[in-house]
Image 1 (cartoon, rainbow, N blue to C red):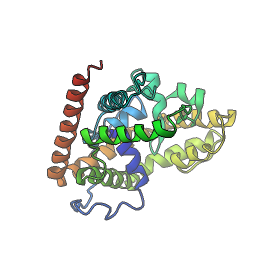
Image 2 (cartoon, rainbow, N blue to C red):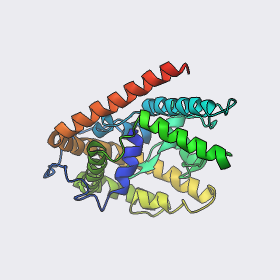
Image 3 (tube, helix red, strand yellow):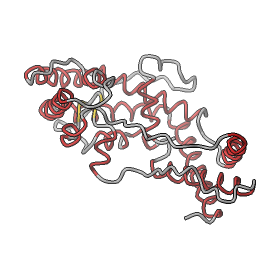
Image 4 (cartoon, rainbow, N blue to C red):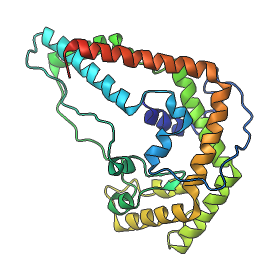
Length: 285
């Protein structure tokens, strides 16, 4: 599971993560020491994927490899079943590369908003769904599902394993700990004061962003709020403090759960290695 996916799952566990993973070692959080002048990440994407816990799980590059392997295995199976022209579901997947692409993946969060260009262009509407594509139907769908199950058995998912559950739980714990940290709270208060001065009163960055997501498209009011959010994030130093504090709490959690996490990391690497071998054997480049 990609680190971004794990992070998203961890965000969903906030408020209900306690006791979610029986194997989680108990840790009494200690406010971590951070640099007097912490630096904000270039993008929210970089901040999240650069977190210590993000090393435990597949990278986006790994996910691209796993996706391509699955498609190659399914295509070969379908062709063996008589669908000689079948070449895949025609869905492309690629890791973010440019700064603009990374900036637009997750600019807004508990850290405020990072990315002035994205704020002006799309505000908080960054999760644009891909258009639906026509999939197989009838007998072809039945054969496709059988082929997908066969491919999944060749490169089994790690979802639901002990390490997978633990990683999600630890992400959730670390987000809770960072949110409750007094230094993050002070930076958030500075951010809130700035937003009020800018004409967009708000107490919490995530609540501000979520308030616009029910609209079908970005509005002028939304881009104005996002632009103010980005400016206030910089002036309050919220993102820099937030990610520095979050990093410290995650390092504590990793130290307390090192054995399980190390084992999970080895499982992930074995999964990726097997996928690479199968993809090479399929002749797909």
